[in-house]
Structure formats: structure tokens, C-alpha cells
Image (cartoon, rainbow, N blue to C red; front, side, top):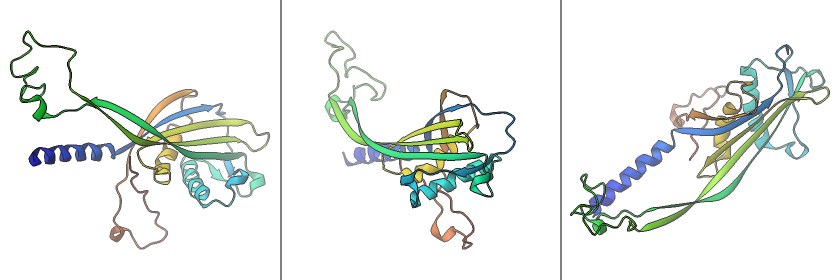
Length: 229
């Protein structure tokens, strides 16, 4: 019995480890991006409640890095920017209920389906087989956290929206700061991308760098930690 439980524990651990290697986001973008836009200087326009927020500033840096990678430029002064960037983020919790068969080899014996390739008991289907008689069911409830990022790029003059993208991601732990780097990268993947089309973006998670292996140079940015799923 102890040996069997050990095998089941290892199998479960392997599944959990496998789930933590990638993060998948649902990305939906709407845009009217002008092909002839040459000046892509931008400035951030935080909402009133976001001003002074350290969390907001952290996410702002992530978005700025992606925009610079795509050829955008920081405006030399707010009043010289051609574009303004605003974003909102949040997370809410919910509950997922899963009902599945309760497998117990000591209840079904060696003839249960999946045990050495034999099914329907040690005597096969037989005349007494009842397709409506199944294994007992168990119900498990666990929390799930829904993370969201919404980014808007508009003209600084006239407030005409050019690009809107919403990124949704789910996980079993409240890890919005750890998931945000991947959500930001997903938001600008294939920029500007197809308009009005929802797509799944899957990114491989970066490995956690041990503290002793991090260079002492403070100018070297640290890689984002691996978020729990």
C-alpha cells in the first residue's frame, strides 16, 4: 500500500511539474493601426488612482521595454509625444469543481480497466456486466485566479484609439506580479497582429536563477521568477 501511494505521489508531482513549464494567455486585439505612422514616440497616461503606485510603475517598465523592442521611442517631453499608452490590470478569484472517478485497485481488483490490459472484472464482460455500474465518483474543488491586462495605445492629439489588447491568464495561485512579464510579452506578440481575433499565446517560463548565480552588476536586469500555476 505504501509503495502504491509513493508511485501515485510521484506521478502527481510529475504532472504538477509539467504544468509549470509554460504559461498560456488568451489574447484579443482590436486595432486600426496606420501603416504610414512614422513617429512612434509615446508617453504613458496613468489613471488618477494609478499615480504614485509602485506596482503600476513596475508594469509600466515591462510595457515600455516591449514598445522599445518594437521600434517605439520614449518622447523627449510629454507634450511632444505622438502616442499615449494607458493600461489597466487586475485579478479575481473563483472556484473550479472537478468530478472524476475514484480509482481504487483494492476495490476493483486486478480485472478493473487499465490493470494489466484486462477490463470489466477478472471474468470479462460476462452476462452480468452492467454498463451503468461505474466506479464511485469524487468531487474536488480548488481555487483558480483569473488575471487580466488591458493595454490601449491612442493618438496623443484627439485621443483616437489605434490599438487595444486584452490578455487573460489563469493560475492556481495569486501570482499577478510573477505572471505579468509573460502577459505583457503576449500582449505584443505579432504586433499589431490580426484584429478582432482571439488567440492562445503560450510562452515557456524562465528558470529561476539562484541568488549566488546572479551577477553583482546592479545594471543587469533580473529574469522574472517562475509563476506558480
